[in-house]
Picture 1: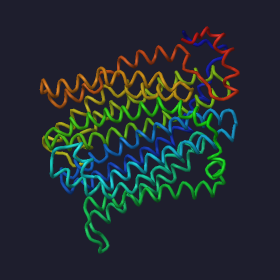
Picture 2 (picture 1 turned 90 degrees about the vertical axis):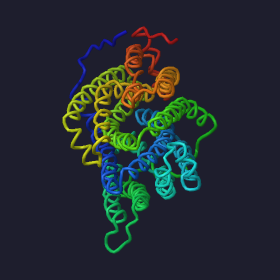
Picture 3 (picture 1 turned 30 degrees about the horizontal axis):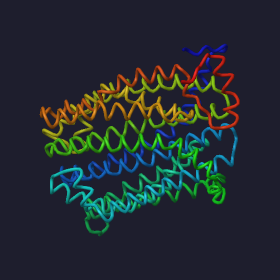
Picture 4 (picture 1 turned 45 degrees about the horizontal axis):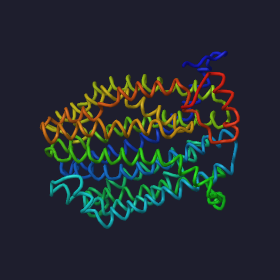
Length: 471
């Protein structure tokens, strides 16, 4: 079923709306990832084992961030729709519920990192030398996890209410702080001892503190209201919590189960040769650069579509959703082509050479071939979530991951002894199938499921007009 609009789509306003939201968020994510790349370059001077160890620690952090994102995405669903409906009480209680859930996750992961780092590292690799380095790093960096929860809660609130410059400014200072302290503490500048990988961990904790503090300071200076409605944040009743959890649970299940599957993938990749482990660690950093950039598109989709759905403007939401998906695909195709031209200098700058350089180059070749569909699927899923459908994309991703991707990957690893590059390619085998199914769902219009009274009131007329029948 296709959407037919009486008026031509206003591309100028749409592109402007996407740019205003996406560019600051993309810059923020790029800054963070660039900081990680610079970290990797500095740590590279300590040897490939150190690069590999820190890369594996980052995978543990990724599992935590996956849990964060489950609640943050649920919070964005509610906040963006309440923002469209101009419901301040709804925004306040949604933020309070999101903050409570995210803080709980951060404390749990912080305890695991600080008090049980040996057990965590043993999950990711059987290389003793790499585990020992990772334990030193993880035991310190775990103190940053509760601090990160403040940033992970405040940033979605600010973005959904279209105040995207505050987290961007905080990120700029935070990244610069991290880079400077890395230089000082890793190499021992200004008469301080050279702490190596432990210095990198201390720098990360310090930067996390700076980031969280600056967000609150800048919000206070700009007199931003919602972040400081402390009492209103916790004025939610059982029915509010029930609805919030009901919408968050599918997203949380998606993020955690995909995080676990990613951990399994990384365990498989972590049991390769040391050059391969180093190449994968560097690849993950570069991949994060692309993910960071396109998080701007994803957030723009969530905010623009969610805001329209919350206000009852369902036709606009439908039109925006389709176009931002194709805009994402076009941009990723262009960047993929550029990546293939500059990948070798980037990999060398990040400390790879010889066999690890060759492996890293092949990993980026595979990634460039599948990234367009992968990121379009990502944006479509976030679009559905912001419109109230937190189930469809989740079910597709989890089912394909556990029924198709992991069985094929483990079979080839354990039974056939498949090469690393082919194993890596098999990780993305589900993307084309999911893209087709996600597109069918996109054009059906059944993903528009508002949580606001205004959105719900406009829904019957919208469905009747376009013949949308819910299953």
